[in-house]
Image 1 (cartoon, rainbow, N blue to C red):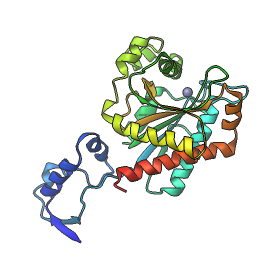
Image 2 (tube, helix red, strand yellow; image 1 turned 120 degrees about the vertical axis):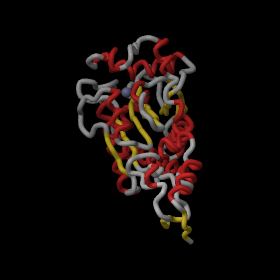
Image 3 (spheres, helix red, strand yellow; image 1 turned 60 degrees about the vertical axis):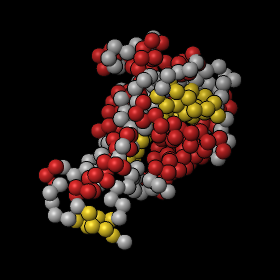
Length: 286
Ligand SMILES: [Zn+2]
């Protein structure tokens, strides 16, 4: 069944449907259902589908941590920048093959250096609906397991430590104090202050993070260290739900071997893909 509505009533429906973060997500330039400009409100009646507003997850930005002069952490042989890129490319391939309505944008597809703030800027410029950053962890050789992070206040020094290590890369960037508003990656106070950013998107960030954590645990049997929060610069200025996945410890010999194998990389990517598909379906109303 189709109904007739005017642009004015469609706009009111949209305003009602698009509160909070959903509203922010819905208003992309590519969104044909975005709120009509004032000049269009007086236009004659037009026929629109019965559900004039329906949220669609259209664009995902995939971010492989590190790259170029920044190799990230390392195991006996594997480098974080390489493993993260392999996982991201495998994930992007699965999304493109199985969900052709989703536009996949990479912050990097090769071994190049990209500043942390530019990664979020790529997502913002492309009006992405979700930002996924993949990394590998480092620690004592017995430490192992996956972590899925969203922006937020760290609850333990260990959580702060992970964010500090990932944020330290800005020391290799030019003008980092200017680019990051005086942020000092070595200072706990800096992390506490800026962890409050991104709060508008925290519900959906956590929703996706929990799906990733569950899929990695249940479908590829990765040991989980849980869903956590801390202040990650790469997530800081993104204006959409955003998560950072620590895919495992390269400093743990068994985990390094696992993460460095192509077949395992595609299993892990498949688990993250399934979490993505679930999240997309849920937001789109099944
Ligand atoms: Zn990293």
